[in-house]
Length: 272
Image (tube, rainbow, N blue to C red; front, side, top):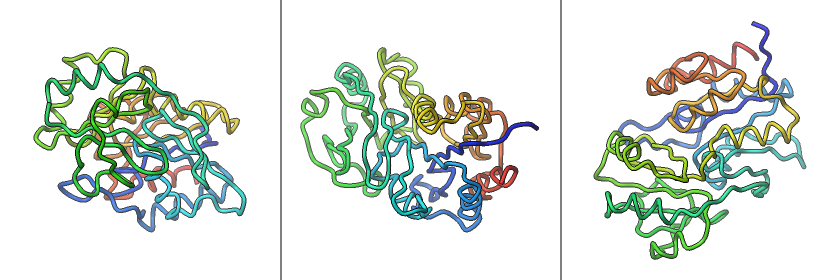
């Protein structure tokens, strides 16, 4: 193979971090094998870019555990909120953000799941929410806010969470509703991310790659979720984790081992 990675894009939950059985939460620490693999990428002088559905605040914890960046005064770039936000760290500074009017989409979804919890990011603080999310699901503070105020102005992302539904329920609902004017991503459970139309991890990563002077064909991307599909298709080499849903694996150029078997480390060892 003639491919040579000049930028490595890594999803976090289910790729770098092992989710806990039954709830999908992840500890913010990578395994020794994955840490060693990331170290080899950094030692080779290749940028490591985290690309996540998390907000920058939640991603910063993982950057700390990976000891990124390594040199004093240096900053790394990240893709947050499923591509709607690009940021630099440290400190957390939003370098670009795409927003949209979410009022109609939120109204439409809540007509079908009226008891759902809704959250909008408050950069550097946490989230404004109409009701509390289960403990551990959101990073930072939860600021109780009436639903009308949550989406009164344009936002970069809206999270809709229904503990009484399944991910399959949300997939079916989103396909049925259409949700015109938005892009949407379904999480490991009944978790729906609404984003601006045309925005995905691929669009966010494309901007970061341009800022770093790296061509699309020289990007290696690894991910496991439905919100990684566009990124895996966009990258010069897109690799799905072994436990990824079939539609994610089908979108990838290759499939590595599962996260429990350090699949990200296995793929990185091919190149570094």
